[in-house]
Amino acid sequence: MLVECYDERGAEVYEIIIKQIFQDLVLGSSVDDLKAYVNPDDPVFVLAIKMKKTSSVVLFKDVANLTYDKENDITRILIDNENYLPNILKMLWRSFSRDEIYQPNRYQLEISGDHMDLETVVVDDPHSNLQRRIYDAVFRILPEGFKIIKDMSTEDIVCVVATDELIKDAWIEKANEYIAELNEGI
Image (cartoon, rainbow, N blue to C red):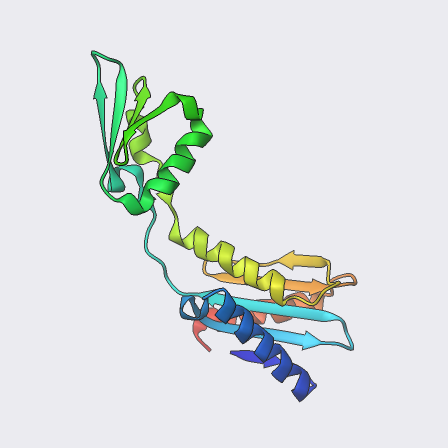
């Protein structure tokens, strides 16, 4: 972790704030590296965070078995991994009303009609979940009042430039430097 600031004490304070927020949100083990630039004279805050690799997306067919009963025109879903049941229900409730989903027991769901196409629907996306948690941390870390924010994030790096003025090209360059350094592991 690098917090770059002309004021050593200010850099230390921001490092403590960042560590505390990461600890509160249990993000420490999910982040490879972090670089921040703070300049109170030129009100800017640049923050770049490299995420660790996550597992791949989990599809419906990875955690449940779907069968279509033609005779009764019902799609039966048998949950193989109970950990994903809340995600499955949330996803189904977005597509169908709660009344359309019959749940005779904890591990079985039934929906009228042929819905075998659900097999390829994403039930969980660890990368997206981690990215969302990191954005939560970023918005807790940013100084209050810095409402002008430019998101420069890439696939594995969350990067923002924040200020209360117009964003300067030099700040964008600083963010691009951080992104390049994090990509190279510097």
